[in-house]
Image (cartoon, rainbow, N blue to C red; front, top):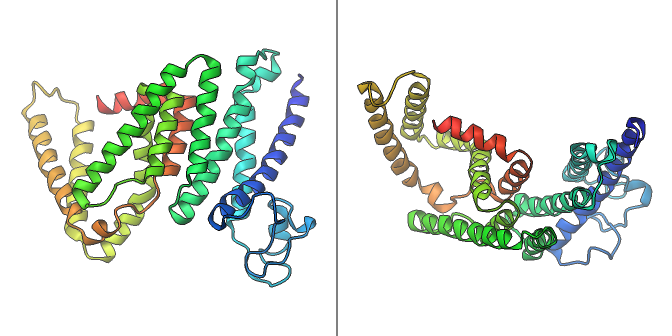
Length: 328
């Protein structure tokens, strides 16, 4: 395949992604209503009018209609074009990731199957993320399908034993973490759907890389929730928590940046003691917050797990090296 033809295929893949993204919106939203994903045809959720084909063009129709239904003039959720565009860009990204298979005629069946395999996983991940973000609900039919696709792939690749070990590790790990949440705040830290997702992650990545992905997911989760969590603490006057957290971060940053040897410098030992004390006190303060006990999860963990899974699948070695460097 020539470079010019590859680009033309790229445009085609992008358009296919846009169209499939439109369908994924339907799959996710009809999971709540229990309707078939095939019938009835797409309709306005407000007035119930059937959407005309020319009003159902991915992304474009949203802007041509001014973000409103042609019939009742109620606003159309921005979710529709966002999911469509994200799916299209995702398809294009996966296609370019495997460009050497097409440009240099290196297609063999074991490699060629990777692109459709990851595209299927990507579609299922989007559906799971939509329902999780929208209502903090993960449907078993989606997560089980996700795991089955991975297990079938691993079986075809001859890695079924590794996959089963990873699946068990993923599920058990999340259940243990949820149990810790129950002990601390009398609620599961994560839903059972997250355990299914973790099991699928383990089946794909294996035991070692599963834990790399889990740490990555925690980092992604923190990036998502810390800004809103800090804002909430400030509004509720939890200044002691904010000050203690700031002290802990400053101590950690100073310790990492200060070029000393732990065994030869008393300052390092002193910093570690201060960090330990401030860290324990910070945890105690956080666990005493009433709103945290009432609602321990401010952002669903499923999307973070899925993002971490894809990142680790493609860049696991780089992430592992970074984490080891950070720890050391």
